[in-house]
Image (cartoon, rainbow, N blue to C red; front, side, top):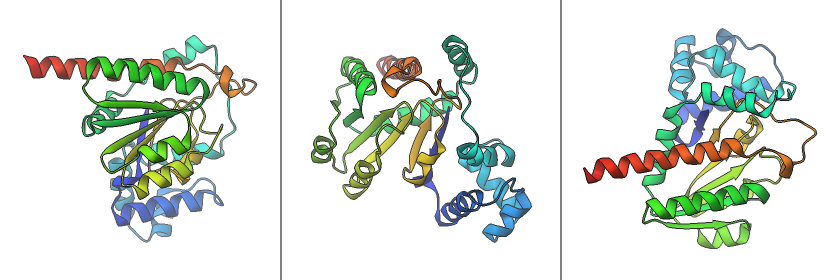
Length: 239
């Protein structure tokens, strides 16, 4: 899993990231020295930026950027894909999401089709553990009426391609609401329009599958781990 939250970038970091994203669309195999030259900073500044962003090194970061241009590879069997996800599980992403979740008493869960059903399940679990106001919707206009500066919008999407979330996220920014998009597949094109994205995997399900046919198993694993984090936090508070 990898959480990219560009809203936390300072002015220089945002400029570096935008410059790299733009350059990667027309140039291949950007070396760190080339990237530094494009951004007008030193290679060491690029290295520091990369680590602050959450990547281990520049190679991982630039590979992530070029991920949007790589040919989509079909996954192996679903159980093998889930196993790879579990082997690479990053609890830091869970901790960051947990910290965001606990800051808001009003949480709006949003998704389309089967992703909406995942959101409904998350609502059910959250209402058992927390005293928060949890609302699940699958209609954009309804979401817009609910958003305010005290709310957190959590959106679920398997591919990020079925329907755009750009308009609803823009409205959330206008209302000063926090928002995070949780995506099962590795679609870095979403970074063009969204500040805070959690990619649960760096894999893809089979191209031949329609959106509603794709597995949501990894969404449910994510939800259950978040719930365990909440249960542990409640137990620690009560002890």
